[in-house]
Amino acid sequence: MSQLWKRQSIADSPLSVIVLMEQFDVDALRQTLTDLQPVLQETGKTCEVLVPSPTSAETALEPALAVCSSARLVSSDDVSQGQGAALKVGIAAAKHPLVFVLPTGYAAKYLPAFLKEIDLVDLVCGTRESKASGWKRRQFFSVAYQLFGLWMQDPECPMRLYRREMFDRIPIQSTGSFAQIEILAKANFESKLMTDVAIEGPSHDLARNSKDFWKVLNSPNFGKPPEKVVEAPVKSIIETAAPEARA
Image 1 (cartoon, one colour):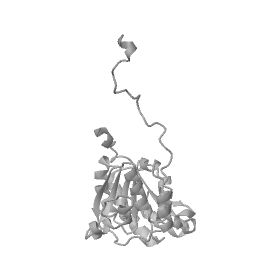
Image 2: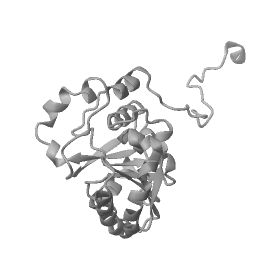
Image 3: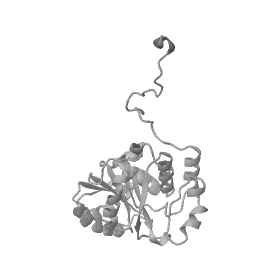
Image 4: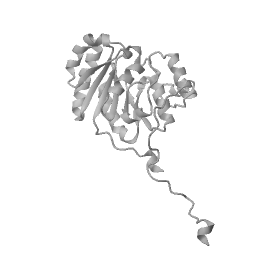
């Protein structure tokens, strides 16, 4: 039974960083990438930095990439629909087994703390210290708990570290910020293991789109089922021979 909770060691694997922008602000992007560059160098990992961007914003954002050698834009008109759409574009472009989501306005310095936890779980969630006060009462009355059973201090924090493979069974349906709760709800249903890391970050949450909520609630998409569910032939637990064999 313990094998169900055992996870393959992955902390030393190559890393994809997805930088999400609340607004397509070149100065905020440049600052985030400037802070991220030395943190990535310190890890010694093979890394790529992906910046989902609307096609119309490419020219304005391109100069900010110069401060981070591994950064590149991932352009799609879908990105302008919201945080969930941008995250979906970034994950589709990610090549490495680990995916770190870093929104502008959040500090890259916490990456080592996230990597320290990932070997034992499937995803590591940031927990903003500004959300600590009164979180149990707030969470008890929340949609995340009442409808999806998520008993977490900060289920809407977008700063997270994922095992890339989990998204094979958790396609993102939400285009807006509800994607953060959607991912956790589906991960919980799929028996994925989660933990959190205390961070400092913006205390505000982006407004949710009610269409995303109803889409996930009424028609949850878990992707294609695995081709092979059972790895080895099933052995019967009944060893008693048939009557004719005992004669």
